[in-house]
Image (cartoon, rainbow, N blue to C red):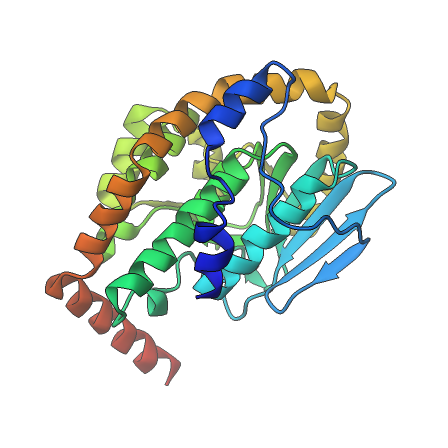
Length: 303
């Protein structure tokens, strides 16, 4: 399969821990150079649009996977490839992640990739989810999430993986993890990443109760860092990026590695166990029945 050839067999993040350790003294969080470097001002794929300004060193990645930027296998494949290319371009110092879809940042994992599939397909999908998170969380670049719409579940995970989160101050939007409301359990690495940001108690309440927060409440617990008017999200992210890039790269990267490497170490040590746990859970008859019921409900709403 295409993703497995790109992500698994070629081992984009194979040996990440050793490379993190060896690079930390040089102030870099390393990513292996699997893909051929391509320097382009603009790069567009069916599900992503990347605008790279070489004069500022900042790339803006627009998610454009309608209707709700669901994290499908195809999207995750393109995302990881795009991240790899940006990491390899030494002139790219910052990444702003945002959405081209109105009112939604990302609705999270694509249920169609979690329902009625073969075991090897579940494995391929989950490996891509793991890879997406690792790409963002261990990135050399300054990463800012410009959250211009609702961002539940996997969308929240993407934003949590960034260095800074700016959200539209619109009470109709929400962010958080509502998985338990559908009988789904978030992976342990999601819990670890969230705990480092909002603390153990807020994480416990959010994950157990499947809570979604409006922007104001998300700011109170530290789930987002800043609220701005909806039409100023991207402009504010661009301005904020300038402040981050004013910090010498080597100092920032060493510090980022120091802060995040313990979490990456922990997750990498259980990555295969996490895979098996996911496959065991998602393939259960009860889980598949619940997902099927939810899909039928969505069909009726659309109808």
